[in-house]
Length: 255
View (cartoon, rainbow, N blue to C red):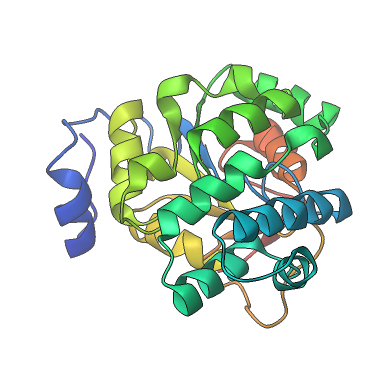
């Protein structure tokens, strides 16, 4: 019988909502939970161009008194969440409406399939379930996964998006708990993959194995404190997992 970690957060958010789960092998992995943006694809130049265009239109849609040139300059920050945070703080706009507006405007045509990642995903899904936990909208998740050629590996009911989160923080324990419940997965048998180390904190607390993907561009200002392993790309992690299971060999191991 599985053992529930001695953690008040886990007790509140998880243990009361999931039925007993038979854990026959403590080293087994039954699910991999993925972040989407900057994890299953990289924030490259094509992304930044499409993102700035989408964010500029969101600013103009909200009639904030900026002309197109001013809106373009305002939307020039490298990460869309930074701009959304500024808009929320400076203009009092609703965060969820901003997310929805941005992702509805974001054109997915910049995305290209990664044949190696797709092949690794097909192999992994022979033995584990894939789940998605993202601050993006459901429409964006569906469009992006289709464009990346990965949609077949993520069942519709295992895509947990901003519409599901309400006011819960990204990768917070309540969101993870709800996704685990949908999937029938115990957290000690799950791997969580994200591009931000801070998002992995709740997953580690719940007993998941945590993976940080840097896209070969680690942020020196935020050293990894919650990730157990660090990889340059998601395909590198998945290739390692397919060869070695939970006993990962090739990523940077953090104690």
